[in-house]
Image 1 (spheres, rainbow, N blue to C red):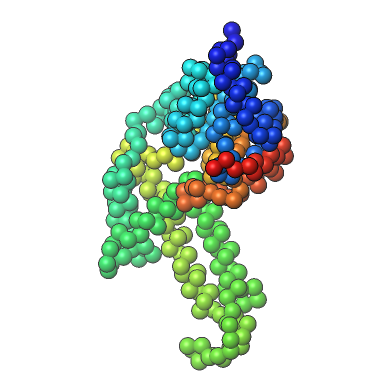
Image 2 (cartoon, one colour; image 1 turned 30 degrees about the vertical axis):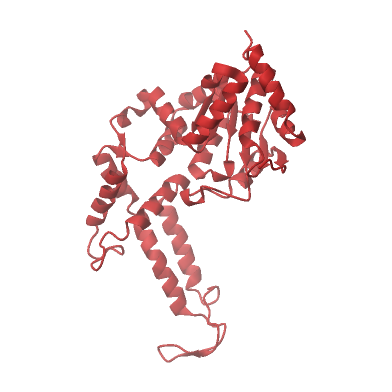
Length: 347
């Protein structure tokens, strides 16, 4: 039975014929790793959906063998609606999802591996705020983030942003502390410190200095600013314990859980590597470290995976969510992909 009915093939063919030369190259280069650089208005959604149709027409892959990852639920809906005009109801058998919903499905399909997590529920904004307040309430009187004046919960924003980045990039307190120690050692070394006096004068202790001399006050000031960040990083474990005590988790936890189980259980990882023969990723420049690791785990079975990414190296709409701006560079180094640039704007 043909995977795409005749009535939809005509719609797909018309869309294909409307593509420009570079778009067709991206659609036709089906096998192996492919990196397409495409800015706003270059028809990325159309490109991805026409490519999926081409895979189904030209290969033995079935719709359920294709995984397409994007960043928003709205993006998922738009892509599936567009795809349905090319392949009909089979569009609902293609796994088009966000990274978070993909991981949620992996967990639901494999509760035997995630059984200890089945009682947990996604934390609400109100509950999350309560957890951060509870965390701050545990701080000792001499904790760097302890406040006695103004708002005692002022550091909630710092903690939330840091914990999000730590989970997204898989940073640990130990790695952050090591980086801080290296920075402090350089900053306080008169021979290597970037902190120097801009002109000659006398410091507050009455010592004379010349332009270019080591400025210990500036070095100590900048180190002091980072000490709070290091102290905050140490609290991630306690935050996770408080979340578990409430039987709650956040979106970033799901990706880390799936990566952990993939690393520990080859048969679980193999199940998804075998299922998804073609993987496509939209807005690739917005991936963070944990999302990239998940993607690379899914693709590592093949020497030259059928991995297609679309990204814009000049922008990142999710920078504020911890996107790793080296993602495209890392992809190029790892896979040496075919590179295609879309520069014709249709807006």
